[in-house]
Length: 261
Image (cartoon, rainbow, N blue to C red; front, side):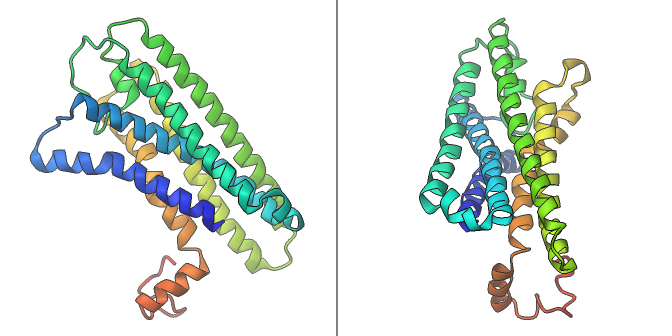
């Protein structure tokens, strides 16, 4: 679990670092400029990191399923080497997916205005600038990727259905509450992440507007990477114990300094 959490933390950190610092820098300098190479790099890394995160979250749901529903077979099904292969496959599939999308997008001739109505370079916004019918190739590639993400989401939901069935058989009410308190926020964030990403890349142009595009992009590119550490870390007793040594009294039962924990 901690090995996968380390990989998730690195992906979340990378996703935030790809879009937010450049946007903040442009805001402070009152500009919206980005170089062509910088835009290509931004698209590659955001697609790479977010795609790898979807695959990793799918792997983590399987890890939790095996740990809770088949604990006696955990070492056989998910040994250290298997975990390493699964994590490497998540990163590799994300990189391959990003390479396909970046190459397809920037091979298109861009003959419209060079201004994007977005706080970072986003594929749907760049496709609007193309004057070639070849953009349909990238459009169908987006559809294929989203279908793959749907398969991952269905796998995550099915894994958690099995987990919930096992959790409901736990005699301790405290144990059931702890499991649901961790699983339900995770499902909520994954659902928000995928639903907004689908909407951002597949919504019809008739309902598109700069303000709507901005809100939707923030919901899938910034919010999930920011919320994931709260869901996976602040519920962790070992992390609480480590933080309590740095912030004495914060994690005591009667403390009012950290009411959300």
